[in-house]
Image 1 (spheres, rainbow, N blue to C red):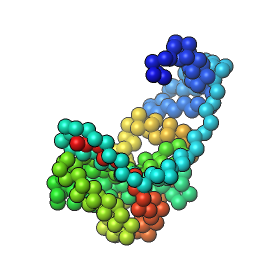
Image 2: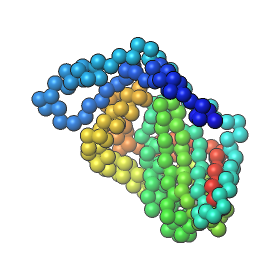
Image 3: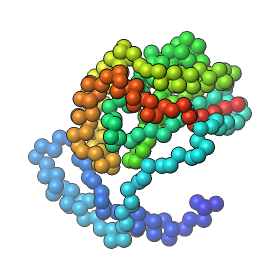
Length: 250
């Protein structure tokens, strides 16, 4: 109803006050040989004027709901699979504890067919094509989410196994898992930043998050120096055993 009642004037007013160049960051990535980049920018976006533009306040970390630790079931008749999402609040990349352990934890828990979750639910049980775990940082705060689909008839058992793996990981990780996770994150980095658009995306994200431009390089060095104790401590700070579980299926 609220969307249907919008008028052209509402849209124009929102644009005038919320869209503008104030406080913006421009990122250029590519071969800028013999290009006067500053002159190009000044002649294009540099002419943008939005006198009524109001800079949005910096986002604040979300406050978890008091009843977040619960199971939410959404009935969707006819679904042949159940989509499972298990989540917890997580850190952003400015965490004082360091961001380096988190992509490694994502890989070790649910980042490959040999990771803890898929090794059981996919390779051993055959319940899923794949379930992934990932830390999702935002400008302020973040989430740790494990999600994927399982066959409808094994929903209960699959969820029980999944929560058991996530809770059991609080007992610690192995040297082999540390080495595998570190090697994957560190050695695939050149491929992740091999194109201009990937470099631009990362640089823009750093600007939005208020991180220095050398953050990515320093973080990769920190990844290579991780210990099992670092992984255990980082996971313990997030995985407290209180999970938000969402099930969508028949």
